[in-house]
Image 1 (cartoon, rainbow, N blue to C red):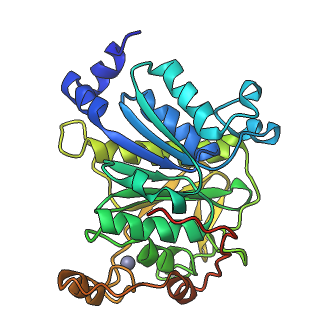
Image 2 (tube, protein in one colour; image 1 turned 180 degrees about the vertical axis):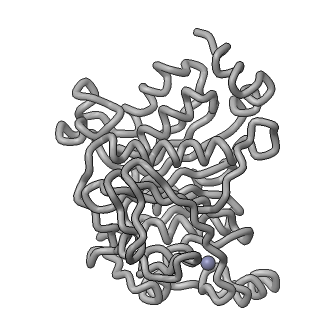
Length: 304
Ligand SMILES: [Zn+2]
């Protein structure tokens, strides 16, 4: 087992730095499993994996794990895959919904969000703001036509609620100044997504993993400066604004700004927070504001 080639690419010190980093991954489906494996193969040393589901036979055409793992919790299957590539990696697994495992987000260096539902993303957003934890979200568009990845750094840029208000509801592209017609949210609060192929998902997940690596190495000479906080990737010809197409396999960077009036991270909330008069934010209010309906899980387990 040798990491010489990775050290040659990233530098020995940077590889040692990655070995100390703790990455959380919420959602170990097609995208999350690929990101987990990719980061393990790049030298990241600590993982916290969170997902409630068991791997089913129908998953394996779009998952890093295969038929040998059917019946195992996805977090267990992915933990084993990580150890097949990086035996020294430390992997903590949580079988359950993120809402019941928010304490798993403590002491992370970055969070990978690989869940489809917009509801859980809003819960994650608030938990990350409270912890000053940077998160990287990915979404794959209907039929795998394309997807997007964004990095959300608390109070540096937009929070996920600011971002989604721009990009998930008739986004106005800051440059084209016309409405985007992708990334629409369905009635069930989930990004409209007829599943694409594994390779459609992987193009987006690879960008998510790369963005995470770039963030973890931001203070080093191996960092990769990125021209925006959001990348839109095309698998097929993708019309991202009227008359504005991305060619297959191409991508476009977008910079989304923080909304000072955001109910989650806006100036009023920040001022309240500074005075320790944090108003209890209602998730329903936020979802309503964003035009998203949220199905409340029947058994809402709350971590204490
Ligand atoms: Zn915000």
